Image (cartoon, rainbow, N blue to C red; front, side):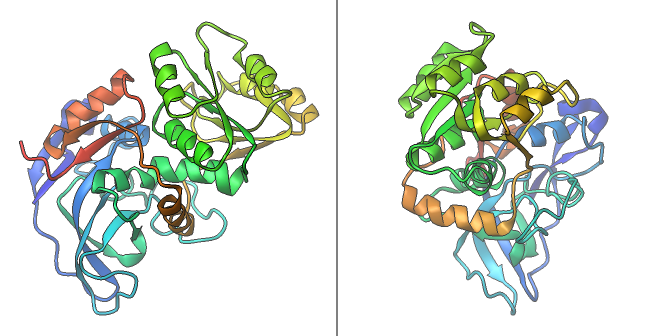
Length: 339
């Protein structure tokens, strides 16, 4: 079967290789065999593919995987043959408070991922996919979708009428835009691209701001929201956190989900203290959160925004498109597309 591996991680994207590998053994016990049909790309996957965060040789890439259950072990109770399923980012964090502080057991990073045709894994490493979703659509849940869900629902506790600020128009932010609007919240979103802001408006964004043209965009958002937003989904880190604090209301919540502007920087602690803001860092979520999200998605009646879809063999091209930052929403991989 096909698999894409980090054959030479020191060479970055040029070190990826499409290889033939052995078919997995039949599932036993609580294992399932999944015929993988789709995935989606995240910046985490990109960092592994480029060898910047993990220099493991021969690692099968991609944290997101979705497909059809093709066989089950004798002790499987959660699934049956033919079920549509989607993988979990932290397969061993099933429920409760965080128990993991690294990526040593994350597929596509510390262990082999889903850039392959088939996988045998414990049933607990997957959840059911939303009914009526394609495999590439379902695969967007694993990382981006669940991050947006946890930020807004688990940590942000949003409700109808709340105001939310989203930074940028990448996969998590656009997912969060769709979720927040479906739940009745008002949404502000930032970008350096006016054309992307127009697309965000078409999806329901209530207020947009180009941060290149407005360096004090945090104050602008605070004015729009009449004193500050309830929840900020913060993807930038040190270079954007000051503005996010300005945009947040007294007693509001900032959920830090990314550090695209760097790993270290100054934090205006006095401003955050005086506004009594809760700053919560998160990394994706657990299996129970994903099951809750899937149930909600079947009621909320929207599907993820997929900017462009590539066949598995063109994974390097897909990563290069991600590097260009030209995408709006998610970049998908469809394993059923044959070159």
